[in-house]
Length: 168
Length: 163
Image (cartoon, rainbow over all chains, first blue to last red; front, side):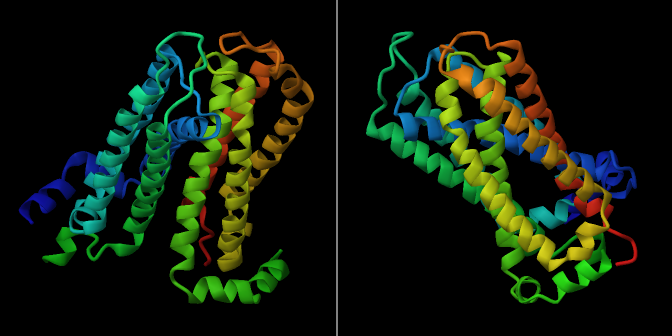
């Protein structure tokens, strides 16, 4: 509980929570949505490519898609930690928050497992993917959908907003 | 405007959204999943046409845009639920007006895509550079997607004060 109190008193946390500026909380929240669109959007489109066309992708292309996903992940790691600092008790006392982190980790593992099944061995050859790739692609879509569900539920399932209020 | 708001607030749909607690979070989740689907399917084609991603056939990527339309249908349906549940939060909201205007411009851009870009996609190989017109339409599409997401996320912070 000391940790929660300390976290919510950190300078970035206080600023994000208390600044009335449109460039504070609203903008960081928007960046979290933009990162989601990039990370999940690119991964979901690759999944749909695999499920619809059953085709492999050139190594350089797959690397580029992974770079775009990491960019989205980076934006969301930074914006996510910042949002966490604004209301640490709200998230850290909610089991749904840990569920969300596990789901994101599983979705990234699914992408990592999918990569070798999708990468084309010979450039230019439109080789088909196997059933394993299709299973992983479908699993990836499902994991991201449930991760988004968990993220949305954070606004509804918290039992505490500020540690300071709860332990006054 | 306020008569329209009052009428919407008096509908059974509005009553349902406000009386079943699960509807709003469920609709939000679907709205965000649809966002990822649209941004992914449409945005990947945009990035490919702009040359930021190579090695994927533009025609095949265009074949995935149907999933973007599925996302759009889900977004529109869940968006109707939000407006039905709290019409005053939207009709007197500057961010909502920006979002609707950007959606309208995106619709015009889609028409431009079908008229100018789509017929040329079949001729483009996975690594070919797209024509200039395609790049302009793709850049506008990406920019409008970002504006729509930004205005959507900002809705909460532009709520009318008298509510």
